Image (cartoon, rainbow, N blue to C red):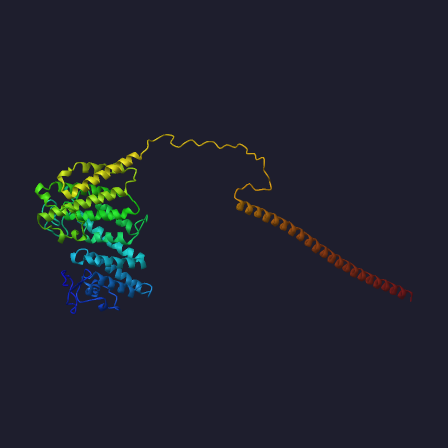
Length: 494
């Protein structure tokens, strides 16, 4: 069939025919036409040129990114690590650029999968890239928040209760004065896409995470603004940010007070807008609300088509806030302070007359009110009055002697016969070991006595032999001296 979507990026000269296959727009290019071996892109322009044949086709883009990561896998060559780091940074930038163009929103899912694959291979490097992009988004939001309202007029998103004209991306900025500080400053789609990416590729249950922790702090700062968004586009972006905050806290059940505050402001804003619908306008409202898409966060899609489009947009936004509020109440229903947490929401819902709401919102309003009442009542019922001595007194341990008339010292009373047999064998082994040690001591003493006797006998023999030799020497010396005396005496006589 003939394709109905238009791609913004130009394709190569051979891609001239258009076909629709599996929901993707293809221009005469299939997976077999994509290259398998190519140079690693180093700049945004080189990456755009490499992915140009896949424009409009999510399947081809996913296949091309798969080949790109397979060619430069970190385990193939050591030098691929630096190239893969560059690819990850380029994909992050492309993701943020695609988030600002409605015709390129199909690229978000394949790029997210590719970034997840790179994060698995090089978690530290990819975390640093994402941290730097988050810091840049935070700095841009702070600059926009503190910019003077006189220098940048709030014309981005149009008036909430009137018809929207789209406007530019930099409108709705709060100034430095006290009045301007009350203006809500929403995030741009680039930052929203980055926050959604963090919630998709990283584990949400870690107590501290190098990426999710600063991301959650950034989300909390944006949601903690004192006023509700003043434009429909700001409301939709705030709703999306609340959904991301709920996803960041759902798995670990962390309490984020900024989320509750933002939902309170959004519910008051959307319900007030829905109640302002006249009776004639209510009849043209849709019977069932539709879920909001990421494309509705862009300024190019901010303007509804006529009055019916404005009413449909208001109903969809209010339904999204109701659903988020219900999910938040289910998440925090076990909190001890859930009654106080829901008190402001219950008051806000009680001030809304159900009959003034469009028919598509009445059932949601009733269910949300009943859920809040039920959860608050359950939280109140779980509370117990405080008592000074709440712990029951511990009885004193009794040391009464236990006598067994049939006690046998040689028989184990253990009911577990296998354990008793093991204990008996252990005792026998211990007894045999002590006997063996005793016999070894006796043998050692006997051998020591024998060695001492042999040593004494040898010493006595050597000592006797030495004395005998000395005796012989002394006898010889005596004979020699005696003969010498006799010789001198004979010489005197002659």
